[in-house]
Length: 316
Image: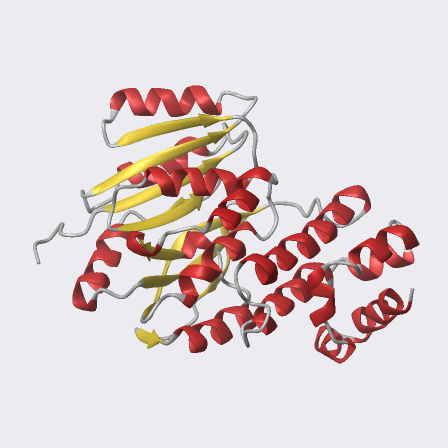
C-alpha cells in the first residue's frame, strides 16, 4: 500500500465553540498525513462558530461545513458520518485538539492488517497543562469485540474521539437514526453510536499512543437542575441502547448498565440528600427499561455513600 493509501474523514461536532474551534481545526490541517477530509458540523451555534467554519472551508477544499439547527451532539455526529467519504471515520469535539501525527500513526497501524476499529489513548489537559494520560494498553494489541467491551467499560474510555471506525460498518437502522437525530441527545451519545459498530467488528486494534488532548473544565454538573438533566438523560440513553440496539437479551447489556452506574453514581448522593430530585421524578426513572437490569449489589463498587444513596433510590 502507498504512503497515503487510507482516506480519513474527520468530523468535528460544534456548538458555541468560538474560543477553541480554530485550535482543533488547525490541528487537523497541520497533520503530517495528507489524505483526509474535514467535516465541520455546526449544531446551531449562536456565537461566531458558524462563521469560523465557513472561513476555513473557503480557504481549504478539503473542508466542508454542515449548518443545522441545534439538534444535539448525537445528531451532529450522525449527519457528519452520513456525509463522510473516507475509508475510516473519526468524530471529535470542537474544544479539544489532536497531535499532528495522529493520522500518520493511524495509517501505519491500519495498513498493517486493516482492523475494523483503531483505538488510541488520551491526554487530559487542565489549566493548560497535562493533568493525566490514559492508555488502555502498553503495546499494540488486537481484541475481539467481547474483550474490548470489557476493557472499555471497566475503564470508561469509550468515546468516539478515540476511535477510528471503518466507514463500511457505519450503518444505522431507521429506528436508531430516528432516535439519535430527533431527541437532541448530548448525554451518552458516543455510547449509543459506537456500540453497534463494536458489536459488528471482527478485529479491534488498541495502541498505547496518546494523541488526543481533552480539555477539562470546571464541573458544571455537580448540583441543581443540570445534575437532574444529566441523570434523566443517562436513564433515557441507556434505555435506548438496550431497546434499539438489540441488547435486550444479549450478554452485552451489562456494559450498558455499567455506563448508567458510572453516569449517575457520582451525582446521586448529592441530589438525594439535597432533595434536588423528588419522588415523582424517581418513579418516572424507575419506569425506564434500563432500570430493570440494575442490581443493588452492583452499587457497592462505587463506595458506601453511593451505595446507600442507590438503596434509597430503589426503595422510594
